[in-house]
Image 1 (cartoon, one colour):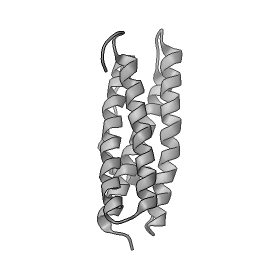
Image 2 (cartoon, helix red, strand yellow; image 1 turned 90 degrees about the vertical axis):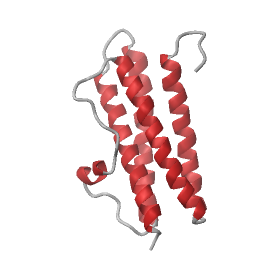
Image 3 (cartoon, one colour; image 1 turned 90 degrees about the horizontal axis):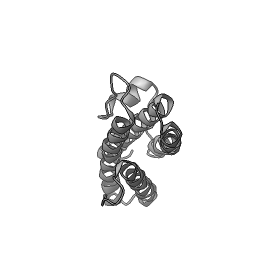
Image 4 (cartoon, one colour; image 1 turned 60 degrees about the horizontal axis):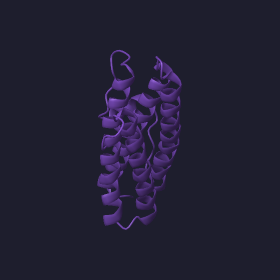
Length: 152
């Protein structure tokens, strides 16, 4: 049986990734305005990537010989990412996704640290790849909101 701290951390990474996925997907559906196409495409790329990561993270739980979540309630319960009560404007959407992406990175890094401590190289490698991808998401989201000529 896998270490309980690693399992708990991996469950948290899965929950945060799922919440990030769903929020990006919701924003993809609900974007409006003159930059609709650009934001629709940006959010689409982000949610498609995060959706694939949800499956990878859940399957990593199975490789640790524990069950993956069996309901939306179970997976959502472990997330700290919250959902807005109304549809924000495009800047609000990007701002929320920047913050939530940082939350996912923090969770992935915590799980990676435990995986490395326990010599679980395959899991650590997968998590490091996810961290790199989320760092790119963060860059793209921040660059979207930056004023021309400003430093990010």
